[in-house]
Image (cartoon, rainbow, N blue to C red; front, side, top):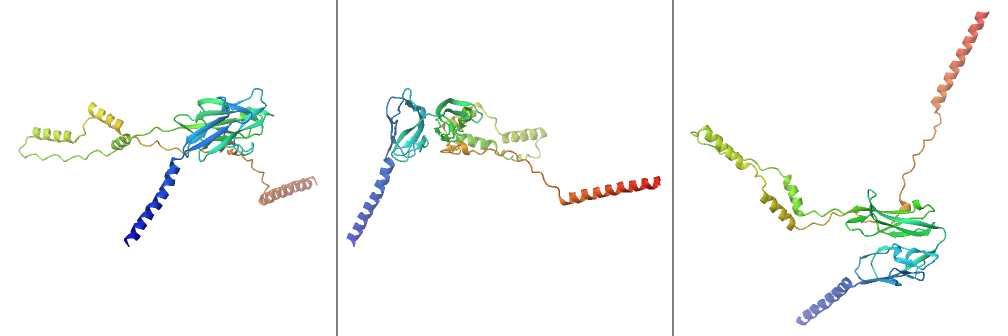
Length: 313
């Protein structure tokens, strides 16, 4: 019986270790993402490949199309990036999360009816937060543009896409950023709560002996009232409160709604134009009324004519 217990214990330890090791290995595994420049260009540093290594699961990579330098006099333009082994028409987001080891290749197109398109980085009021970037493509293309990181600001989407037209003023990709709220300390929150708390209840004045004079009674009552009044804040109290705030742990920033991974500007709904009400056909009662009025008018005319003839005779 004892041997059976020992055997079961050893088996449990082996199974538990077998489950823990793969989980630990998964958490410690790092990923590699490579982006190849392809045959029509190089990257700004002159290299043919960008390597992002030692990445964790869920890291984000932002790739700008302007990182590619085309050959002098090239007839090509940068369309985006595609997964290695896929067709050039299958360009995807240039800001993406790392979920596995993967290779990308820059996708190119041949310039035909070339048009420019611009990416702007603004706040909700339209104020510029960073320099705009200009790209080139063909009319009818649907490029994908990635946001840029701006400290303390969050965009409405990580990627924007839109169909290019022959009008440059229509080919605008506006990344609208929202200011991330500043963190609030627990001390500030508790101070605000205390400021709205009810004042302490007043205590009843002490009874005075019957033979106490009126002046002594007034003095005793005034002293009791002063004892119950809240103390005026002093410089030492303010300094102590400020020191408490400095050492208080900071809470997490108020969360904003997360940005969309890809926002299609073509699909953004446009308010429909006001519809013109259709002309309604006259109702049956209106027709009956008009007919009755016409009959009455005709009868009156006949009566007048008949009366004139009788006078003339």
